[in-house]
Amino acid sequence: MATTTTTTTANKNPKKTNLLDHHSIKHLLDESVNEVVTSRGYIEDVRMSNVRLFMGTIIIIVALVAQFYKKKFPENRNFLFGCIILYIVFNGLLQLIIYTKEKNAILFTYPPVGSFNSTGLAVSSKLPRFSDMYTLTISTADPKSISAKEPVEFTKSVTQWFTKDGILVEGLFWKDVDRLINDYAKESKKSK
Image (cartoon, rainbow, N blue to C red):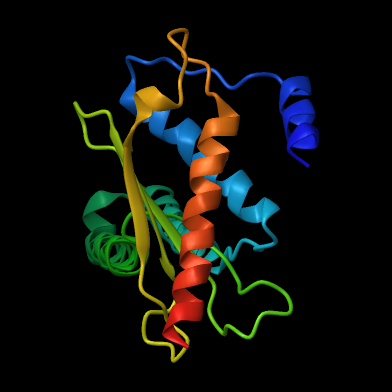
């Protein structure tokens, strides 16, 4: 099985990033985490993204209606005031959803098919500015669920996964993420 993984990884284009840009490093690692988790049979839960897109669409519609309303400024003062209030309220709600529900999450999943678990995963990551320490956390998507488990995480230097040219050594990174997913699965067996 290891030979198959190595062969498929070798056939793909290598993932390269600018090592001086911490945002591009985090983005590349987060994309790779998504690939690892979904390859393990977890299906991405996009409901939260859909809610954010819907709220953003409402905000844009409010702004467009305010911009292209037929009457000119002195006559549409109350209408513009209402649009500004709606814009602020919907933006506030959007920020509240992002702050309370998403936090640092890069991926929400449904429970795996055939699992007795009633909640999926919430995968989050951190790469602080001016630091090379990448933290990956796997926790339950619904912490209030009866099947909620303790979160597991690792913190490692990104220098372990990249060559000096900025190419991600996917095999090493996949092993670390795989090990974390296995630790999370073990944690659930211990709690039972």
